[in-house]
Length: 330
Image (tube, rainbow, N blue to C red; front, side):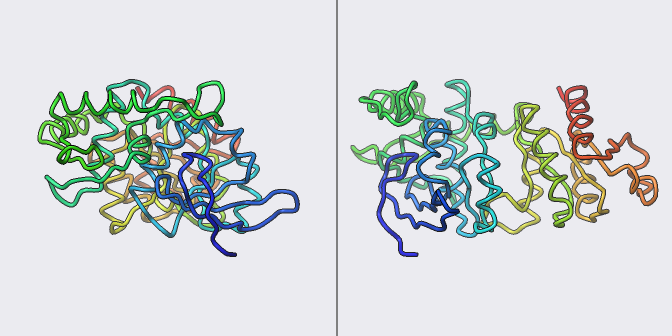
């Protein structure tokens, strides 16, 4: 397995890649792109299945900034992932639905995500951030490809890039270093906007899932993930989240950033009880779910005091959980 130079199929930048394995008729490749970070996909048919104008900034903010070398995304379908994960044990499936939900829909949302995302790489206020052009295209949500053909580069990306820069400079959100645009820093008004954005928790699309990570819960995890995505939210499951922090502070941060919490108690995981209690203490909506038979036999007294979704099959869980979210989450 020798690293080779090859253009990243998502952003077009130079990257290293290795042909990791072949399942008989297709090769699965792990890319290490300086802009998109590390990710895996089948080549070349992943190019036909993703919106690269959305995927490029998603990978930039969720791979490059986090920069966790132990985990990486798999870009493709669930069917492809089911085959690839036997070899790619550290891969996390990234679906089009999750990218679509995460991607900002308005200009104002894009500015908020730019400021918030870039601030997360800072150790302290006043630091400069290096953003070479290719990274800036992803960081500022500039579309690289024609809307009707995700393999045809746009002739002009400079106009949009300059427009975003000018807006953020004119409103005092950032400043550039000397005469170049490759080095910027966030100004006090930029941090003020971040603070205002952070206070408005009702706009969060994240849903924290508190549950056991045992192998026998794999199908239940998939059912919960499917339901969260189906109802328009982003699932956040702790062992899938890329970070370089200590686990408990990061977990508490994720709970605070979530719109609501789903707590699955089938395996009586102590962590799930703790996380549900912490979320409830913050005033978050917490949806309890548990397998019906186990709940009746071993359900803890504390959770029996609250309406709990009792499921019998994965299909049953998806249906009931979807109805609860739509009925109780505004």
